[in-house]
Image (tube, rainbow, N blue to C red; front, side, top):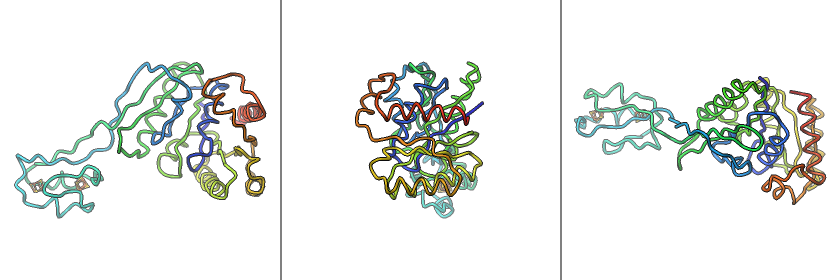
Amino acid sequence: MRQLTVISGKGGAGKTTVTAMLATMANAVIADCDVDAPNLHILLKPKVKETIPFYGGKRARILKEKCSECGLCVELCRFDAIKDFEVDEFRCEGCGLCYRACPEKAIEFVSEKRGDIYVSETEFGDFVYALLYPGEENSGKLVSEVRNVAKKIAEEKEIDLLLLDGPAGVGCPVIASLAGANVALVVAEPTLSGLNDMIRVVELAEHFKVKPVVAINKFDLNTNVTGKIEEFCESRGIEIVGKIPFDESIPEQISQLKLPFEGKAGEEIVKIWKELEGLL
Ligand code: SF4
Ligand code: SF4
């Protein structure tokens, strides 16, 4: 099965907008792996068909009625997560040491529900996304689960393409979204920080043997930095699949799901999709 992951190194480069526009053209199962800041569902207006609970990693919990207050767990916890014989769930790293060491078996080590995965239908195909509970951190496990649910749907329906909106950054969740991808579309914005972010994700994709290609979003807002992005890509043999001009009608066109997309930016996205189809 082919997989295209859209990444950008940080939020705000237009990654989700580009993913939504590609989703309207691709025969794909779509998934939002940007689980810390999911917003593709706002654009694609899904109808939820199924909700799957998501359980995160295990955390410790002290059963007061069994605890003799010997203090061993407090001493052993390297993360200072136990105070007054209570576990601070935000500090607990789930190593399980206290659970194994407690002489009174007064510590539970349990998985708790941390959010939900939604399986949905949109005008453009099946779509999987997730929402974490407030304050919960994404470790990459949820990204892998979202991707696996999308893959299963694609297999059942014999659709041979996954289109993933990847998380921002270069951490564990991005790596999880790149796993198994044929192509990583890096959406870059023409600012100096955008250039640095792009370089970091390009190198990450290459490290994991995923072919990176670049689309420069709003390229005409800073032709100087656009030139630097082009120089970098040329020096590394990375294809630039398109340069999208600034077009203030795009957010509105997307929010109305008005097809076909109009204007030069819309035309460029169509061209980008044709390029990507040839590469996947
Ligand atoms: S090790 Fe067990 S018994 Fe001792 S303080 Fe911790 S929870 Fe209580
Ligand atoms: S599971 Fe590990 S991190 Fe969590 S409270 Fe116990 S010793 Fe500390």
